[in-house]
Amino acid sequence: MESPRTFSDKFWLIIKGLCMGAANKVPGVSGGIVAFVGGFYEEFIYSLQKVNTKAFKLLFNRRFKSFYRYINGQFLSLLIFGMLVSYFSISKLLDYFLEHKELYVWSAFFGMIIGSIYYISKDFNHWNKKTIAAGVFGLLLGIGISFLNPATENDNLFFIFFCGIISVSGMTLPGLSGSFILILLGNYVLLLVDSVNALFDTFSEVIRGDFSFYYNENRIKTLKILAVFTAGSTVGLVTLSHLLTYLLKHFKHSTNAIIIGFITGSLGVVWPWKKTILKTAIDGTTLVDSNGNDIIVNYERYLPNLSSADTWWAFLFVLMGIFLFLGLDWYGKNRK
Image (cartoon, rainbow, N blue to C red):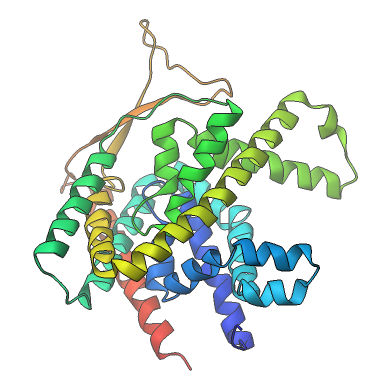
């Protein structure tokens, strides 16, 4: 049975959900890091693990209150509510800044990940041959994923369902960015930009009494893609939570070592100084996908130019990311 929560606890759970939602939207940043640092990662995983056969029996027998208590419903509902709000507010704000101030956004998140590495590793005192090997494995895996080339867009519904299962890993595995995986699979813009915007536009039209979207073939197709992606994400979230519950119970230290190594290796994903390489035709024109979006081939990383004012501003944002991250952690521990 879940313990009573004060109004302050509920408010901060929604804020944490907002942060998780925003982090999941940014390539290279993991919502699981927010959960890990926010001190609710294990509760999040164990709550998801409660979505099992017993929970469905309670639901089918119409024992709704027992079902809600069994799955830690208040915790999950407040957290998920924050994530949903984030996708239609904070994430849109992030879209704007990523388009106009990309270097500073990546710098801030780079700093936040450095802060998260410090936070996660500072109290980990279980280094031995086994955990060091696990940490090195996680490090190499993170570096390897960072330098993979993205695929092209694919709107096959079976593949979309698979994308949902895989992308949700960012919520359950700190350091593994679900949105970056979607870039590698070629469907980041389709699933986290076009589909979300289509849903937002549809809600806006319905509120105004405009139901013309029903006759918009492209809109209906995009909403169907979003529905399949959501279904895949739900399946992946519950499935991975059961796997992680087992790993945290039987191989906790090795699992944490892999997480630390993976987060460190994934720093290459959010390296601020990089150029996007787009796919071009023989004549040099930029190729686009079926929705008119530029096709990303890879990212070209480079060293910062110390004579540029933008570089020093970027360094400032890295520091801000580090101190903001650690400051929020300190505030969370010391607030009454």
